[in-house]
Amino acid sequence: MSRILFAWELGAHLGHLTRDLPVAQKLRDAGHQVRFAVRDTRVAAEILPPHRFGFLQAPVCVGRTRLGQAPANYAEMLVAEGWCDRKALLGHISAWCELLAGGTFDAAVADHAPGALIAARITGRIAIPLGNGFEIPPDSEPMPSIRPWENLTRERLLASERNVLADINAIVTQLGGQAYGRLAEIFAPSPIFATFAELDHYGPRNGTCYVGSIHGLSQAPQASWPTGDGPRVLAYLRSHHPATAEVMAALAASGVRAICIVPEANEVFKAQHSSQSVSVFDHPVALDSLLDEADAMIGYASTGAVTAALLKGVPLLMLPAIVEQYLCARRVEAMGAGVIIDGTPERERIREGLAALLGEAKYKAGAASFSAKYATASIQQAATRAARLIMERLDRAAAYENNAPKSHARNEQGADGNVQDE
Image (cartoon, rainbow, N blue to C red; front, side, top):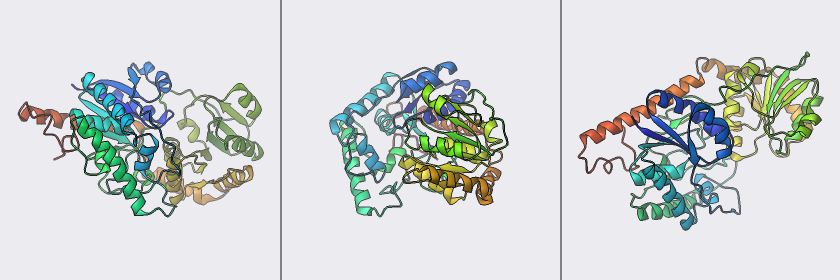
C-alpha cells in the first residue's frame, strides 16, 4: 500500500478539504496511508480530526506581490502569490520537496497545489492534480485569459506565462529536476476534475476526466424552514462581504422565508437580521434537505454551492466577489439557470434579481435541465471514481517500478514526473 499526501496550497475556506476528505476516506479504506498538508490549519482542525486524519502546515510562498492590475491568467495569479521572487520560490519548492521526500510519501494528490506538483516532479513522486476547472487550467500555450470579458492580448498572456516559467525552471533545475517546456505541463498528463463539464470555468474540454462534484460537509447539522407561506430562499453568505447587508435587507423586504448561512456571523449580526421569516446560522448546515424544498439560492457562485443547488434543480442569484466565482456564475448564466448581480450589489438590484428567479419559469427550467441530466450523480459516486483513478495511477507506478531497472525506476517516469498513461 502507498503513503499519500493530500496537498492544499492555494485558495481559502472549506471547499478544498470537503472535496478531498471523501476521496481520502476511500483511499484509507482501501489500505493506503493518508495525511494532509493544508494551507489553513484552522479549517483543517475543524474538518479533519473527527475523521482521524492527521495534518501539517503546507509550505506557503512568502513573496506575495501586489500587481498593478488584475491577473489576466493563471501565470499572473502565480506572480501575485510571489512566484516571481526566485528566492521565495526556491524556499517554497524546497520545502515541498523536503515534505514529500522526508515524509517518504509515494504520491501527492494536489488540490490547487502547483508547488506540490513541481516538487513531486523533482523528487520522483507520483503527482495527481485534483480540482475544479479553475484550479487546473487548460493544457495550452498560452493558457487562456481568466478575464474573457476583457480584450487581453495574446502577447500579454504569453509573456507573463514565459516569465513565470523561466523562474520555475530556474528553481527546478537548481534542485535537480527536469525543466518544463510550457507552464501547463505542471498539470499534465491526467488531472482529475471534481466537477461537471458544464461548470468547468474554462468551458467543457474534450477528453477530460470529469468525475462529478465532491462538495459539502457530510455531517453538518439539520435546519428547518421558518413557518409561513412565502417562497423559500436559501442564502450562503459571509458576514464581512459588502453585499451581505444588502442581501439581508432585500430578503426582509421580499416576503420570502429565508435560511441564511453566514459562517462566523457574530451575535449582533444575528440579532439584527433574524426575524420570524429569516433564520440566520453562524455555521454550516446540511444543504440537501433544504434544497429539496428551496425555490432559489443566493450566494457568491462558489463551485460547491452552485453545484449543490443545480443538482436539486434550484436556480441561483449570484454575487461573485472574485474572478473564479464570476467565471462559474457565467457558466450558470449560460445554461439559463441563474442571474448575476455584478458591479455594485445594490439592494434594489438584488430584490429585482430575486423576483426574476422566483417569477420567471425559464430559470427554474434551466436548473431543472441540469438536475435531470445528472439525476444519478452523487458525492459518494464522484469520490469513488476519483479514488479509483488515483489507485489506478498508483498501481501503474508500482508495476512500472517492478519491471524497470531498480536504479532507474524513479527517473524513467514521464517528463512531468508522473507515470505515463498507456
